[in-house]
Image (tube, rainbow, N blue to C red):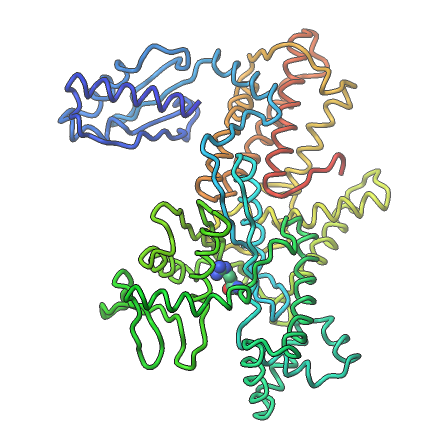
Length: 580
Ligand code: ARG
């Protein structure tokens, strides 16, 4: 709908250019917004205000000219001018009904596939394996996974990449500690990587001899010494299986096959440095190999270096990321590389993207995007910590989510068996954690608060999951099979129209999530749909309406609402429940 209207506007602008009302070189991006207030129509644009200056016209007069130049069509019911020159459009009901029927008949609920399928490589989760996953690893996994689902749903080929950190100096310390333990002690200690890391770190800080051994082991590891490699592999396997447990519990679609670890690029790192040298980009600075990029300057106006090799010969995080860009472009054949990594790494990504282009590692048309996100905060306004002040292991956090959800489910007087309660608690608990994250603008920090995320009121997972079961209950109460509904949509009541107008927007919302990598657009939308359904359901009788045509139409609205909620939640990586 939006696209059709935009193309009508583009035609109007072109006509005005031909007539000389607008200068031929006046270029604008035609952009339609949703007015805040429904009484202002379905779409609004500030086009006339943008073009007033080049046209040397008063914006309201230009708005009139634009409206007059829109070709005859069956989409628009009204076009009005508001304020200093906004144009508001109202879509015709005929059009709404057609779209609604189309969405209803379509298993994709009207969501169009992309006309230009691409290979999209999505880097997400990507934790360091030295420690167990903690609360700081939530956002990348959850947001990245949702965007991957959406991009895939639109018909792109998605390649997931879990760029785990398995190669830094920390591993020397861990290996040195492993060496010291006998088999039994080792197996025992490795069952909790958090305490294992702490114990190793303690040894490292206390004993110079141990620290020396740790440094030797890093060298041995990186040069491929077999015994050292085997020990390291044992550690990595355990750490990865911890990650996999977390992914499975979270419903994050990553598997072992998506792991492309930092170590996998090791052999290519000398080539990266050599190729930068050949391009004349390298400068030696205090023994380190650097590239100075004029695009990034410090406070004193000096170009910042990207260090690609340390004075001792070691390589860095940036070197590996340069190798990874080449791999994703040349081997995986990616057209678009997306990175879901903490906002604090923004500069790192801007630097390596710029450098990759300069060095010819990235084709000019390779799309490179770092999608950052804010920090998960505690109620005290500081990064979230566990009660003892340490970092919270994700596994423990998810246990707590399930436990709290179970208490909620048991408290609600219901007819579920004990086994059903456990299942509902698992879905509600995990979904609440995910949804609390997804529903916030990813660029902001957010406060991790059990009470709000588990609330049945507001824009939360419990609210939406419950809303879904309520919509479905319409069919059991009416004793109709949703697939047996028959007849056309008839919309009279304002609440029916409101719900219908939202339902036909699903396509637009899903596409905007993919374009901006912003899942909270979808959350806000689903929350609106659930709210609109509930107003509709309260005001418009379904079961007892004596006009069969209206009854059928209302059942159809309910059925499309249920499908939209279900599909929308699935794109967020949240399963629905049939009863709760
Ligand atoms: N392992 C890194 C960290 O924990 C994140 C890696 C993100 N991906 C990348 N290609 N750099 O900070």
